Picture 1 (cartoon, rainbow, N blue to C red):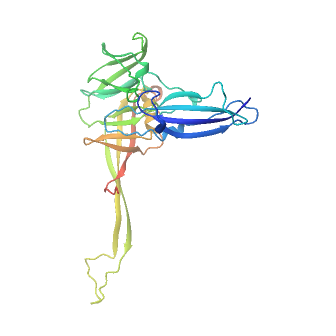
Picture 2: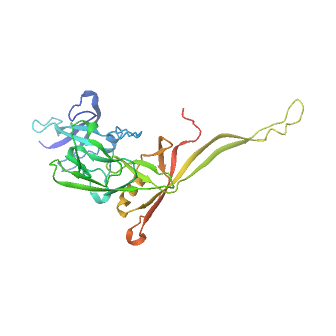
Picture 3: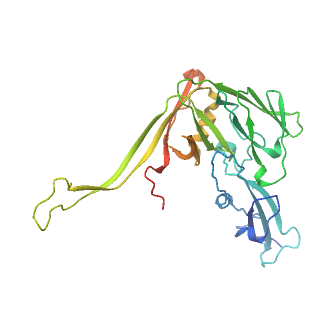
Length: 328
């Protein structure tokens, strides 16, 4: 008997791996072989992504879900294979992505969930380092060790290790506690003139990553409105009041923007800037609130130490809401 059709059940859930129930069945898919092919391919990434709800309120919560697929194999007579069916696989899903150069369906980092090897923090300010807990044994920050534990719950898979204020070096070790996987240099910036702004975005690994902007910030807003011409003539007196305008404004609102400057950062942070530009979820810490923003800048020339010596990036953001509250 030859394989003809595969029925795929997709379960999406939180908690521990394999703890799904019938209520977690989100999709039932079916596909058949073509010609002499003996395999069937399902693309479920976009379907799964619908169940990854990314919200952020300066809380750094793990945003991962389990996906279990159960494939039932059928022959040309629509009979279930008695051997090797069903086929069950379980995956951990994050809202990440790979670059073209990474090839098809790449597995991203299993330790530090950050591409750059350096970060910038204001002096006397703590930071966060996202890690994949299952692949990390310990974190060493300036010779102080922190053991990483993983209880296999989806809410523990991505963890955010606190980097104490004024730290210098963060080292990420494998589960054997001896193999060094990544070293992150912490640059503590003294900025006496401008107010630093923290921008948090979802990076390519599906983790929240912070980027601080230290230099000049410029705020602006753009007003939108409509107008109509009204009749101000009084039928009783055949006169009009001069304090009544013929043109009346309505549907007035505005969107606010902010232009930020990173200050001088090293070339290693080009990857951070790229991932910020590609992120669909970005927030700014603004006047004590965490507010959603959208990178308004759509193009950027990446700077290198060879060409530019020192690199300062200027990025414009739109606040992702109207100035006048019209949420209904």
